[in-house]
Length: 216
Image (tube, rainbow, N blue to C red):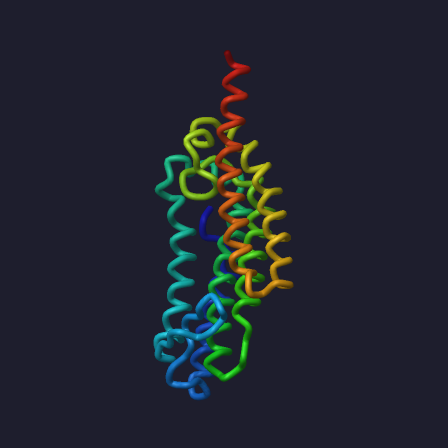
């Protein structure tokens, strides 16, 4: 159930990224930019060997973690009802880390890339993708919005994820508008992301109380 032929796609992405890093290694500077401050200025570097190996390995570990953690989930039987959605979530998370890896390789090659533009766009797209798949996620202990009220009730879980899916898409789209104010783009995204998380948790409580009222 958790490891099928489809898994060739994320694994191939990781292998291709690693091979690309090896091929580009002779052309990379010895020290590759690895961190930028809020103003988009480089404030830390790492050796090219570290960058080339770390990110593909990290992407692989995240992929394996997301693939095999459901095996120890007490609600693992529910994963079969959203296996396609969960596959694409794993794939997109893998692609997310590979995109970060490619950004650093580009910086190591001497290309000037605007991190204050790239990162908000990348995170905004991730939120939109999460929003698309969130309504398909069924009750479990590892993926989704886990509050005491969603874990308590399957109805609350489903209603919360249906609502939050739309909310996350709106959050991602609004965050993309931050590219027109690059100095504040990441702050805008972080603020909207925190707000959407708080609203999702509050909504799950409201739905729980409403359903509990009906039961009484």
